[in-house]
Image (cartoon, rainbow, N blue to C red; front, side, top):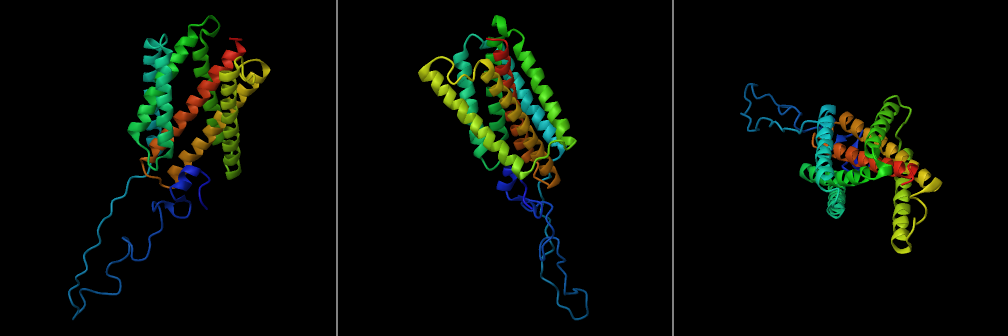
Length: 280
């Protein structure tokens, strides 16, 4: 049975064959086959064999939970460094911060469509995304009604992460193919509505479709946070499958990238929801 996770499925990842040959059963005549099967080089009258001894074929070490934790910590730490720089130096220059955010978005899209994870690309995304988040958070924190809101958003993001991790480990939330399709379709609809709302705000002025204030804005913000939490479940499933099926160690960078994207999403939705609740 193939993995329900689209990332691993795209890489030929299945329960039957392992990850592109990792943990796969030995094939007849393969590296683990007996090179002397059917012959005895020491038998009387036997001709000396000219067959070369079997060669050892090194394999990439499968990823472990330590790999995922280490690379996720490194990626999130890079986001924090970028956020600190943005908070300290760019709260008065949001134009530069927005530019950093746009470049980060492009880098994130490039990595999403690459067949292999690129640590340099992922860390570049992390530092630029951090600069954008830090500058935006510092600016909002300076507003009278938003003072302390960034810290509340951080705490809220951490709470969602812990709650979803517990729900996943206790199997309250189970990731299936149907669950994955539902989350992806819901996220696509959410993003499309957000883009339409931005278009109305840009060309029609005001609050667009009303997703930035009032009851509808609060509902939309809650939906955004819930979607982020559901994406965390998909991320946990990706990590669990990767370790269980023997994915190469480099795939831990992909897991770290996915977790970082999701946590950034939740933080932004938390910040927007707090802004609406405070009436800013």
